[in-house]
Image (cartoon, rainbow, N blue to C red; front, top):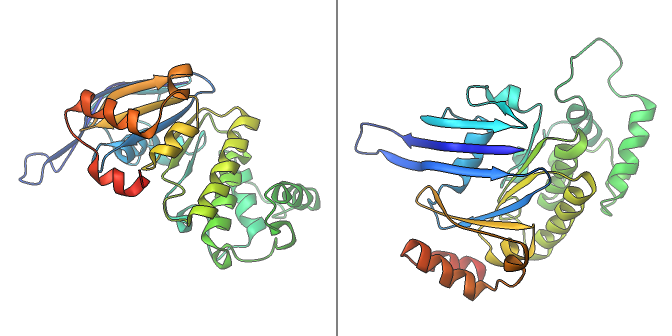
Length: 265
């Protein structure tokens, strides 16, 4: 479903601020894979997701999705088949628009626009039923501006929007990092359900090792723009935070001391 071949990216090349964020990165995801991505600050996790989403051009290498080379495809065209949830809950929804208007925009992703009434009665009922599955009472607040929702509610809404038109690839970019632990757990539970019900191929970047271990069927760890660990199946199920930290140290020659603070290990 997704393949990165020798992808490299350097920011500010030729200057004193030059920073190589991706070093000949290679990664293949099969259809239905749910891959968690872990690594220290500056490891290249979010840069990889931005490269896949088309936020910036890569310097070299190729990116293909479902057999189609998208390396030179602009971001707005990739949005037709890539769903994304950001770390900042404010980025996934239009705060000045109603909940139902946000859902309508998501439902029309990748489709040609025409002249007709905005939201039909059938669509509105579909949105109510969809929102009711969240258990947050949002089905009774269709005309509430998204900007009035809590961070967790907005992330839950963004998840629904990202999967409303089944994407070929779902990108979750530290989408619980800005939430309190209880809300983060709820959003992760919802993420698991949406991924499973829609059989979505998913990449989830996280700083939390426990979350990386407990979610998904595969875990990759990055360091200095490369993948240094790739663990799946029964091997992943047997992982603990301590064993993962030890394996990272052996693979990369460095310690993730900053991430120890973040994960509370």
